[in-house]
Length: 466
Ligand code: IDC
Image (cartoon, rainbow, N blue to C red; front, side):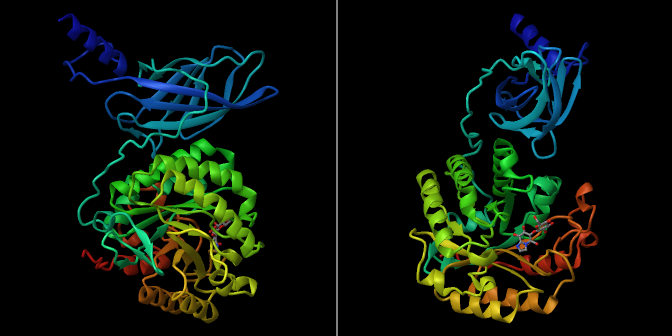
């Protein structure tokens, strides 16, 4: 009886109730917080806050803590809605992390100001329950995979095809038969994160029948370099959301400016070591190590690839890796070269493919000719393309888009379209404002590009099963 009373008291605290109408079911509660000051300067600092739910799954949560020194203030936070009242700071979960399974963690962070000392916060609570797990200051290990051996739904792309591998110039499934993956790319997740939620991923998997979800994690332009832990965690959660719906997830290290991927070599090694370790047991992950090298030689790209691929292989030996090519992943064509520079000097690694990108209104016959030639010599994956000009804007070129997609279908070359977003540009699949709502399924929310891609992607896959 004593135990029952104690449990009720815990629940009452957890829910912030003063009186109980009826006894709630006893819920397992608990949490752990890892607080790390990642940078500190005169009067300012940046902190990472990783909260792990040790209790029953929660949907909707608020983390609170106390800043002990009167001079400590939160200036700007991320991956939560932040507020401060006196010394109490509150961070409420947002769309993409408001559901926390048992053992799952959310990575938050903030920049703060301080005067005098900058002591660590105290009295962490999650939905009112004290976080009694350790409050450490060490570099956290990668988020554990909350669901390391999932069983993707039968009939889904991952359920049917399982772990993929490269076979000759094709991508092959678990039956060693060539397949084509057709899907969509996010826009930059630093700008359009709100477009990637349960409703939009459901629409992509069920209505679009997409095989693939490419996660474009910019490195610059406000991306990974500004918050490595936060972006790593967001990518992992998007991988899980794709997996839960039986879709492949392509992790795109979206280098663009500067164009030399070696500029980001150390970041790439750190990032891929973390995501490959965390996602090693999954069957749905494909790694794309450099979006669009530009202004750089093939030799420099190859050198980058030969340093990053071993880092991935050490952690996740069987995953397919895709290497960007010269001239914005045009196999060199946009730089006046062609596929022979890769054919004659391939990356020294197995189970890899090469990226080819095109924008249908800008890149036409000469580019299609290069792909037709290369398709018999190199494993290709169109990890990004648009139906419009290379600016991402302008009108849809229906005829060129159709010619391209027919060519890719003919060679079973996989593709991801830029973009599954409501950006105000012709390449976006949704009309501006769509991601402020909950409808991702009706034809009313689609742009011309979105309607074209949905009609192409949603046709039956006919994946071989023997
Ligand atoms: C574009 C976006 C645009 C953004 C710009 C710079 O559509 O909103 O301002 O990047 O970050 C690519 C790149 C891809 C580009 C896209 C369209 O991989 O990042 O997105 N594009 O310009 N290569 C060719 C075209």
